[in-house]
View 1 (spheres, rainbow, N blue to C red):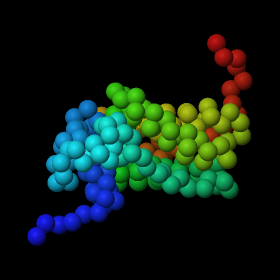
View 2: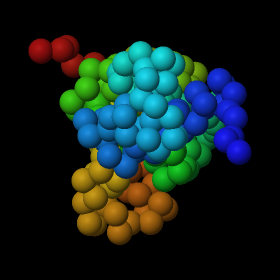
View 3: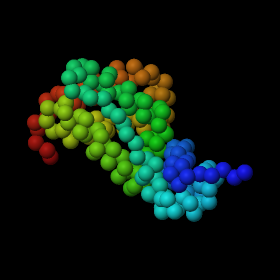
View 4: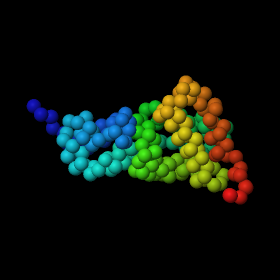
Length: 189
């Protein structure tokens, strides 16, 4: 007896398969045909729901960080409260790592990553920074993305070998400085 699947169930299965494929194979090597095969549907079904690989990727790469409310957190505790959220995303959600890998070569991925920061990170950090909110959030983002890329994509051995707490101990003061220290007053060159 053939199993029946609802339209929403098929769409969800395609997105789940796409997240797995993009996470394991990266953007460039993932094909709509391979995603369809993973789900057990014809590639035309993937095209029907998502039209293009870029559209499939954009939707599959959409995720929520669920950043904690940092208002009221003592400055010296900011990194310790914030960093576990990033570790959880990096280590349990292949979507983020696929997006990170793809952002270097795909404008869709880069735009999606920028959108995540604009919609989620910047507003969360704006509430706790004294000034120059966008610049401070961008610097925190550069630190976080660089760390994720080093640990989970390039797999730099000393960074991979570090514990979560070790990373918080080393990187935390930099993140705290970005968020709380007075802004530099030197004129831009």
